[in-house]
Length: 283
Image (cartoon, rainbow, N blue to C red; front, side):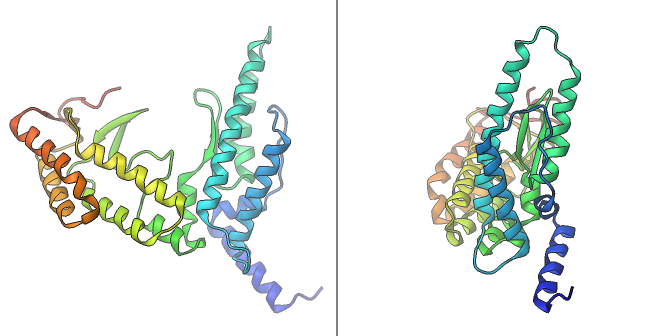
């Protein structure tokens, strides 16, 4: 069989994308739900639609345009579906008189290995933690495949929902110490402002606002601060942030809050502690 030049080019592009982007490989894999979890027809249809969109993105076909933001919205819907799947399975095993613990191993293998092999940009586990969720890291790696807004958002290093805050060093499951003297707080604020000015996609603007809320809360607390390393770096970073906020109109409303925190630290109302000296981050 002789292939046209166009067909050969399409195949080479698709193959290159699969080699470089694991999500593209997963979108091409055979679907196999195995046995152990009850996946509804609606959820299977949602997953197939999601896989189809990834194939369009990876092939870079003209005509139908797919945004990574739209894919992330679909991924979150699949995640919500699987919360119900896990709840149904958990309820079913509670009613069993003699439960085989090996079934936990089987379910974990399904969601962490088998399902992630054909559901692009997902990660999963079952046991101590139960989740089947979009992999933020996989979405970041796939950003070159997206449109200009996708690239602007991911180049700005703004985390997506479910990603651990980049300005915190995790010391336990739900928290950690602040990276004063290490994290570029002012740079992060500049990136948020850049996204708000250049991006129109509602999903990305929502994520930028959520990141801004978390960032500004961390920069203007009314409680003691736990920094990861040098305590002296806290005031320096806050003063730098305050100077930048005074120049950026979009952040003018935050200036009084940051100024109040600076005053509270200088007066001793807010104490600065260091994780490096003694555990202070909770957990």
